Length: 527
Picture 1 (tube, rainbow, N blue to C red):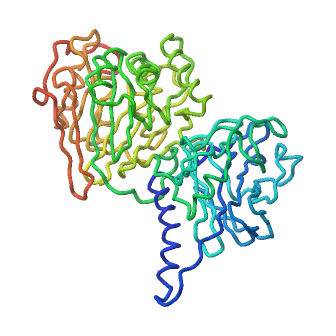
Picture 2 (picture 1 turned 90 degrees about the horizontal axis):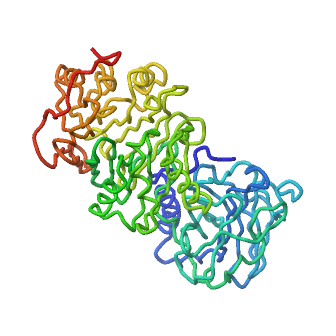
Picture 3 (picture 1 turned 135 degrees about the vertical axis):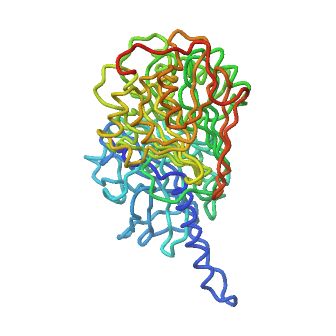
């Protein structure tokens, strides 16, 4: 099934939208003032998309349905179909859509192979629709957009079809104007290829669209990043005071990212209340690893009373005997089945075999989610590292690696080569394993070279965090720290403008504070 490079980062999506607009603008710019305006393209509308078939493989079963909302037949010869990660495909033969009629464009035109779709035209393997976020655009022969739609997820085995909304802006396939189809066709997938959609009268919505709006500006699925960032916006990072655990909230240009959720659902819930996150959308959640002090609070995200939507959830999905984690995974999987959430394994974060998956946030910041160390029996060493890069990378970056210990730290360097790509150097280091001595050494600190260290820790705690050996490593390198037990929530802000710098502000207290539980550790590997 196609998950590799599921969609462009937001900047790429915006760039694509801009390309469609530029095509039209360029054509307009070349006309002499005395010339009449070009007629609008025929009203051909994308009304149904099957991106994730289950009865047959994606490479045979994907298709797009078009509807002719005009009063005359339209020949699609010379028209172009484009999607988020693929080269545009020019329709090279006569494909006629009758007035008020439908046509299906499919990857495989053979009804005996493609799950039962009577495709009028096969566009082949050059276009592969993302099961997560992607977009599809239809352009007339002169390059103008006739219609375009985008989505952030697709239900498995079901097409999404346009409802009878009459709305002009139907470009968001995840929105209320669209619905998962329930009718079964061919080999058992659900959809209505070549016919009116379930519960919808397409004419009202289709007739209102001329020209079509650009794809909605939604945060796309994690994908390899190849384009410049979008419009820069302030980046805000909050290392939340959750006790003896981890939770980091990141916001940028309307995008929201959460890494871990702390050990106490009630405490984390109060933070959700105070931060105004109820009733909002969290675009990306990363659970670094399976330990309770990182996942327990995340259950609050799925409480119905909070009305929080989660678009993407990353974790390593390792088997782990913990009832609270099992309940969290049940909540995640329930939303996956409804087509409301994309669930990614950090061992393959982009679902394309690449070790690093880059997500571009709406404000231009980038989140690199990395594969954790494989084949470790210690859940701490299965922590997935994450690097945050601000809209202005010279102003701010941050490295977060959960509870990774010495074995994993060495693997980041020599096994995964993360020091080369995406690069481990960062302005701020979130201390591994709550300031434990097994979460830092001189080599690791030399690779990251942070200006500041922030530590998520409780006082008192039973582990002796921060360990005296860890503090000695930080002091020897001249790296100051803030810690949540003494300083409360730590807030970092970067304006996103060139040379804009950053600020780091504790809720209280001063730098380099000690805690009541701090002690030297006797565990192996700590000196």
